[in-house]
Image 1 (tube, rainbow, N blue to C red):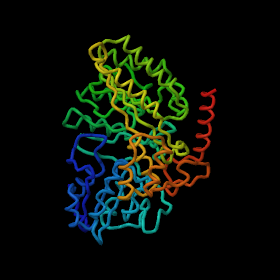
Image 2: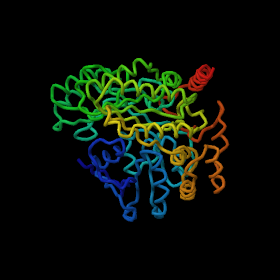
Image 3: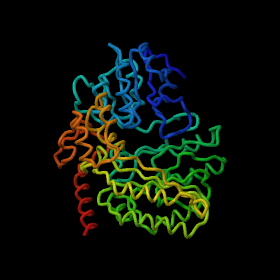
Image 4: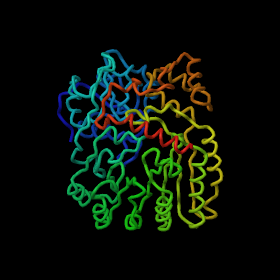
Length: 457
């Protein structure tokens, strides 16, 4: 129901230019849809329509959105306020040059005040004052629904993977089990979004799975830890089984604090394929300590499954690692291993036509170095129109130092710390304190370096 709050003319701008999709998608700005529906704030997709509004809200989903903002910056009229929120705003330097305010963290509780025009709030960066210290707002997990078919079941992550922002940004929380059961029973549709970082980390998910089966409904948003897969869960699963494996080898997974042995990984993939399920295993490359031996282990895992099963569907996407702010990985100098990219492309080609001989294995092309580098620098410098133009002229292929030099040749310089990081480095996001900050993060980073050295030896 729309609110009657006395706000001046405000809108959301949809940077994707898409429609107001209601179904779950990892690319849909859910906060924008929720607040638009709750408070009657219109969503605008044509920048020419922005002139009619005094306040424009942006829900920044990813670093690509920083470049979309740069491309439309000339549409900002005098006297108009632009306010940014969203996950990527935990590192606001990329958009602070054009936004009047940046909200850092959750804002479900605070949005009515923001909509009324209040700006002196915890979590609000007033960019005219510079990037002053601010604490990431980590609200309690809110009751209620994101939509008629979606409910946030948990927030954060109980694990401590060294590369992932989730455990370092939020404390882990779960909805009361009874509320989730009630939602499943009352929801009209059969496909539901029970949103969590990893379903089987939710302490009562096995009971929820029983409830879904009893009502003939399906959780459409399952992401699972490898260890948590059970025969009952796999047998019931009607949608794709999504597994974040991350490291190509057991040793790499140990290094990044996501320990999954080769034996367990093969056992769980075999469990899925043996039930004829569609699976997706996500791997990262550019992880610290990585060598071609690690990729050889992955190829051996694939060969073992192909020799054991003659049917099924298996997607194997590769994501180039990007050192994440507020995590122990923030001290890693960004690296893009071109030789690994080439090996992945050759592996991808070798799988063409796999359906004809057994398991249908699909390996999408990984993100190339130029687009990856654009994402990395969005945490470090203001993404102005000039920077966006320079990024478009980057070479399609090159090492990270070569990319840095290519930017410098166009008058865009990165701070020295980008390639030289120490324990006392002041990062562009150092003014933001997150709920999951851990005084031991540097110690975790140094222990990781010790594991890398042992692997190399």
